[in-house]
Length: 335
Figure: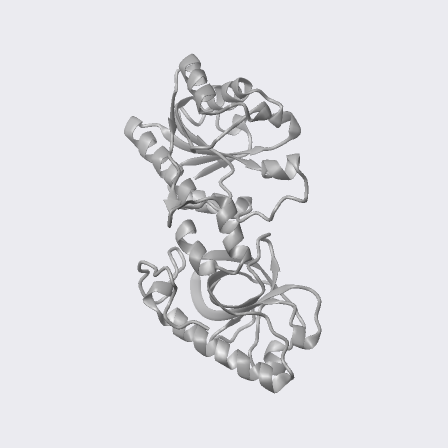
């Protein structure tokens, strides 16, 4: 997939295009439908399929740092867009000056002159341009003026509710990672570099953990989770603690996966943690013996859950066992 951050990079590379546009936070099921529809239409007419998105997220510029955490930052967003078949992505640097453009100015500059758009695919609630005045009706008018068609995708629902980034964010923050999976068509995941922590996991407890310096913003609710840990394209079973380690009186929140039956130096390496199911709340224990016993039970539960066919991860992460349709209640063994 071609990735460009300037229209000048694509102006001569694309003869004509079918475009979808949006923020695509999470690249969830609704976004995947938009990308799939765009790719199918592009294939039919022999055009390039292009996803137009923004960096930073417009809310980060217009609202400021008090915006909620985002599900996917730009690098992961682009990785997921590529996996769903887009041939090119235009990542437009978002500024207040860009936000001040009228819908017609934006469409003419970015879609018509640069991408030679022939068809535009948008979500049911998409708005663009100054004051968000560029709705479906406005875009249809611009399509008539600049000779392109506009298609609007109906809301995508799951369990009777619209799939949205806000809904997924609320689920993850509540620890309901199993329920978020079908909305994302994958397990929720975070990634980061393994850094030195307090070195208590292996030395003191007998369960070494990888302390992550996260690159992602959205962290699931504190507690212990059954997880897959992706390392060099392979998924390894594990359990992860998110919290402050209250038994030891820590204050800083950390994400610390323990990879089952693994030995090796992970410091300085980047790993990805796929959250399968929440096992329990974070808890302060009376001492080391009680904590070690509880961790051993967490490991037992994690092994059982991760052996379940419905708990297998999706490609490209390569793991033993097939991926199957997920039960809405999760694997049978629950803490």
